[in-house]
Length: 370
Image (spheres, rainbow, N blue to C red):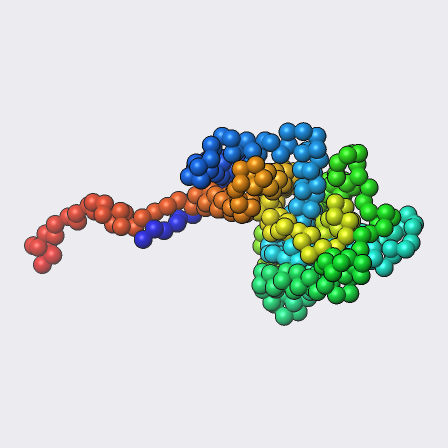
């Protein structure tokens, strides 16, 4: 039987190198996988990681993919610092897109500068309120937030599907499950002509700066980190645990809601059932890959967005299945967890330890004993 023993000291250097090692192991495993599929590993890896960003349009698309992931992941960094395990960023993103779309469609005939801010605030409110349900269940009934947020993801998805088949369905859309196109006043402006990169990336970068200041330069961020490190110490210091749970979850939900409304008001321009290919779930990997640090999360987000783009490129150019994206995400998470375990614990096999020679005891002097 194999046992894990905690190491006496933890290496901070190895803790930061763990994501790099996980990335290298993922590339090696991916190369082996491509070889088994009959593909040239170097060509396949080039198609996956280099070709998608070989021109200006590709770099712009990288930012388009990165914006919602970054917003979700930076929000998750706040709750995870507090040891509140929000797995519901996907549902909060969907609710942000749904509520923001409802607002955009309600104001579709109004051409005014305040329409876009109203749509964005509505989307943030949708994600915030969806996270508030999990906060209420946790603080009022001590419900496990992992279970509640996961279940709320599925409820949010079904609400979105019902909406595009029902009250928000475009009456002139030839029975397709989608809403009408938003008015120009409810669309995020593009930053570079000829590309799809929009103002949502600016919001995401601004959120990185704000969360960094919150966690490292504010008393509220200090309270959140103390709660995560030792809840009993936080209570002893007079910090209000339930209040911090609410604040951290609401921040996370609002940022995920902004990611959702940014998708429908940005590259899509309408509400459709598939506004997210799993950005909220990918953000969980990104948050841990970036070590819950805003700069690390930014770099991990770019890698995750590149994997999304590379999976689509490999499907088009190499005929590989679209599941390749999820496979690489899974391998990245697996290797990250494995590296973290080996950094924090050492492997011990008791059977080998028991087989070591044991020093014999000294013979008993019978005369002295008598």
